[in-house]
Length: 418
Image (cartoon, rainbow, N blue to C red; front, side):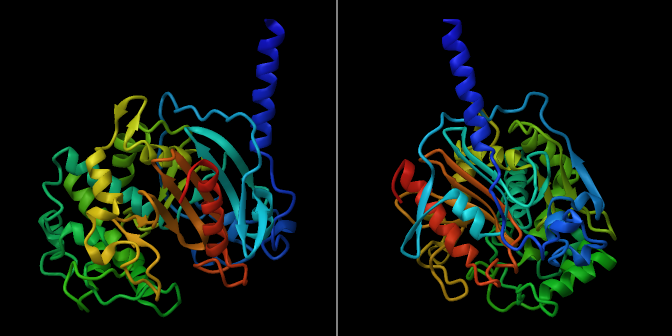
């Protein structure tokens, strides 16, 4: 019996070591700063430059002012699954493994969970499990979850309320007069371009926010291109509006509210942080969350389990369905219907991307390749952090988005069908 127990412990240890093994090599290591130890940028404006992006995306607290979210007193366990056949996928007519994917793409961390257990875990560019990785726009979904939790607590009366009902400083402004549900759906109707270029509206908005504050930046957006609620137009400014609504409705900071109502109840193991806007110390709701890969995985598990943790509800299942179920969105926002950059492949819910297929699937996405893919039916969560060459990750010709999609499909096929 003792030998059997030892054998089981040894098998578990071997499985854990295999799951966390690093890829042999990552693409473009030299241009990304390997010889310098992957340094962080000397300023926020340089974080996306190639010599600094790896170090910065896992070290934002060294560059920017942040607030801290403490973990749970008792973290949710993430056991290692028994070792199985390697995960594979098919891309451009060839079959590949997870290690091939790590060798093709600029991935800093990747973890796959099935039924709450770690099936695979990889790190690139000398990144380690204790590092906190920048979410970019994955934090938009976390902001939306906080809005839904505030509605559950009665602090927000209805998503049909307008932003100015909670933030009087926005009265008479375009965003102030927009319903919360339309802000959640990226459907304010504002004329706003977000192309991640120096001259787009996002850059102008962020400059105003940095210099004179979040409310001033929100009030600077004044022109509607279409009526609110009719069309999808992705713009982080709408998430910033939700962030100030949350602060006003709860009387708390977004950081502390998420810590109390979501981060600790979901069983986070490590501290997390949220970047603050330098002029007014308001959270960058549109893209400032930093957390470990394991805690992003726990967030994915919370969503895959429809808001339940250890048999206790953390979030309302009905609210999560409102957020993530394609059939609960207006027709123009569903996969196969919503036009985004000439494609109708994905749809959009409440600050979350909706995937097509046989059942409900959705994803949190951030520029440069950040993603949390969730399939509640299959109890499958895939978390990826990355340093893609541009916002879409495809400027190098590596086609990060396309190969990531193939990887997702391959992993889904391992446990079910698309």
